[in-house]
Length: 206
Image (cartoon, rainbow, N blue to C red; front, top):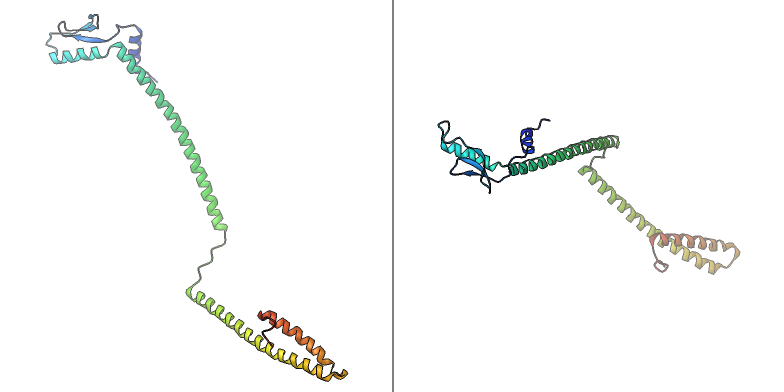
């Protein structure tokens, strides 16, 4: 790339008079300070330009002494280098962003495939279905209560039958009535099973 400041760099390399410079208010020239040796003459007086313009030209020349221009170029070069560094970093960031976007696309596609492969979600139960479920639960609870009541009645009947069998066994005491003892044992087993089912204690049924 062409360096637009090449002419300035070449001129500085030639070794011009160091600054600072100042406009001589009497001699219409730019002097090196503090020696006051002339650096350049100003065209004055002249009809080619106004006095104000001539004075402005002198001020610009004096302000742009070699030391000041070297400092400006150094700042410019440092900024240009920083800009190039930032451009490189920016290029790396763009590459990273592109990579992240590709990864996001890949993950998004994977999620979409998983969603399409997964079974469809079951629809929410309707109010009628919820009510039907509640009615069914109440019916089951009612059946359990009725069954428990029947079991209690059966337990009471069997308990009385067992008591009768025991009494008859004790009264008879003859071989023909020995079957009452077997009946008593069978009833003991049934009564114990029913009591366990109902969660009763042994003393609840007489």
